[in-house]
Image 1: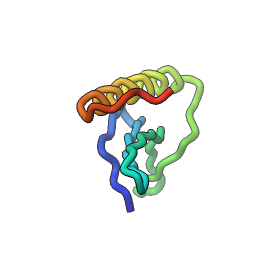
Image 2: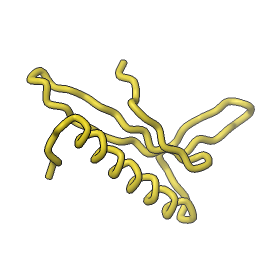
Image 3: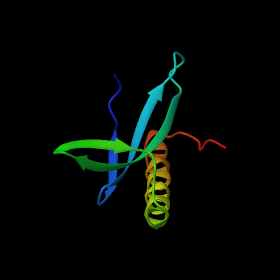
Image 4: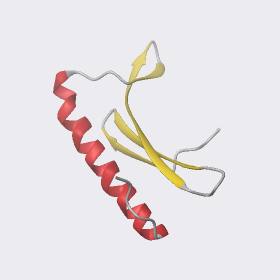
Length: 81
């Protein structure tokens, strides 16, 4: 299983950055956005957000976008359209 390369957090919200390479060595980045919550002592994760969380989700998405840009520049990659 692929491991995330970085996690950006704001409280219970998290943007996880993933890196995958194809057979030709081309690297692609993606993110997943999630909110953690606890039920009966067990931690769970959901991709559903309340209206009051949306601004924080957008800030995390923007931070992930910026971080992926940094990673691409460090690797000498061109930006994807």
